[in-house]
Image (tube, rainbow, N blue to C red; front, side, top):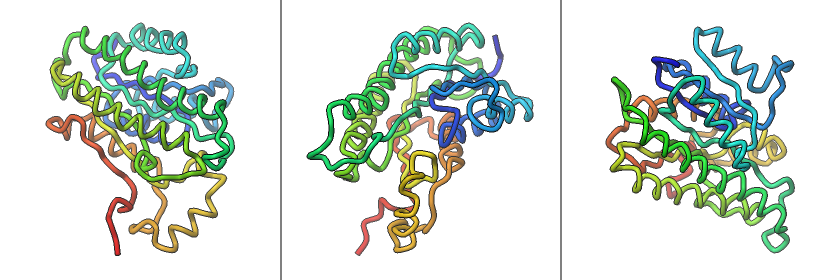
Length: 263
């Protein structure tokens, strides 16, 4: 058991999830991090690199393997967090995938659609349902902000990319999911937020880095740089810290100004 507030972050072994886990640990949270990749012998990357970084700073990190789209894995992950820490105060639904192969929408396969939707939308929906039930039943924190759920979506929730339709549709679903859970859980004192990243330098975008380097240089992003995981980590920490306690349902877009309508 812990006296600290507890955060569960999915997809915490790399990229944006790693940035969020480190940021929450720096705020004093005990962090449980899930990832489908789990290798205790890998110290240079993945969950155990994150664990080492957090513990070096005096924090506490519980690495948990599992596929967030698998309900048995979900149950085991949540049970492990509760067994170790006794509560969950913050859930960050970050785990997600892009299509294995970008294809025109007229060539999208059912297999790719089902895979992306299962991980990006179905998984977070039912994990949030599961965790919210525990949040409602647990004793409120002795001090500090209310519990919260944070969904990591994408500008693809609103920006069309016909070469990865299934990804865009899944993120639009996550955006609506945020509103629905924010509405439902408001009476229970649980805040729900959406962070909407733009073009971020992660493993997911490695295959299109040259394309986006060019587009950013040409002015697609007003602030003229890639987003980095630390940008999302800072936003997630502010939400978890309670800086926006009177703003459930809030959408925080981190896109370097791409939301600005320009002539």
